Length: 496
Image 1 (cartoon, rainbow, N blue to C red):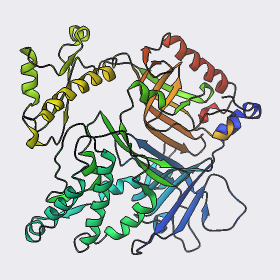
Image 2: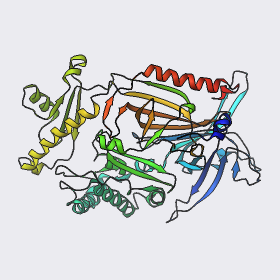
Image 3: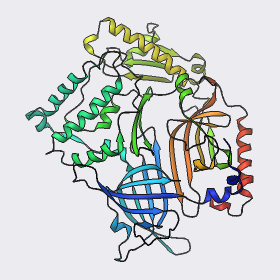
Image 4: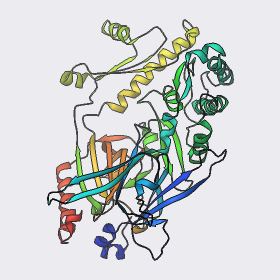
């Protein structure tokens, strides 16, 4: 886990020298199979070629990924460069073109153009700054933006949606029993949704074109956890009259913050992988998370601290449809009848009643009054204990942001690599959970990565929480002094 000596000697040069490529391609939405062609490759350094496919007109880029939203965004800013026909990139780039952003030779983002605009503003010196701004969302957003519409007339006349519901539920009948793998339910719903979409070509004519892109760039298989199984009997209704999109259908099956479903770009397979798992806050899961380190020498900014904004003192899990609702739960608990809530009596004295009440869904009402219902209530008590374990230290966890020079993995002789969402990082002698990531570059400056992190704490080698990171002020000050000394030695520090 060390920098090569050559890198150390040339650090200022390396971190400031951008190394990126932004390729824009145009898919054929009318083709039954995926085909495309390249519109432009914006590159970071001029090359010895007159090929009009390459351009150095890009003056900034930004892209993000997040655990909390499927439609993370990107933006590109380019000059008014003209070709030999007088056309700018506003004329040559089209909405629904695809965008691939690479850093240090690895593709790290894939998106789709949604907006193109010409922007002009007067600068302080009286000159006018004119640029073209291209923006959009990642390719996963197609899962939520593409709608399968069942209008009332269609629903009533040929019962397309209700028949699809029955066929899918028949297929899932075995999976919806306790012990069934949730990943199989997700995969079956995903496949069925697009099968139905293509059958309804008259009302979803664009389905075939978008489906070729999804098939080519999205993997809804490998990263779906096999470990999550149904723990109580459920009863689903998948399709409803009106607008349906696959992402909302799938997320309706989840129970945040207990479950996670998000997309992660794989630069080797050039696909977004759908990641479905239990939120990794149990010790074994935390231990198994990929861990990266943020070298202090690359850090340019950090903003970390703890807060009382998400402190809880009462934890309760309940099942919708079981006849035991949130209001009744609190009343029964106050009367001493409930055995399913967990309380933090020490924090209650400081913060009062702050409930975290999580509602699990789709309990099969036919099972009310059976042993399966009693088992489900017992399960809710176990899950309430789990929630307390996960979140009882929220007022001690560090959260905030860490900004650093984007990592080129070739610099390091160890295991340091580009941090990703859903992983953990080592920093300040503790570990943090990465929830969001933003990469950016502006002309004249270095390539920058900004992480939004939570759950900063000291953990054991087995993933158990030990306690708050100690001597925090001294450690933060030491890091600040370190990078101030490093960058302060160079007169071009203003580019940072």
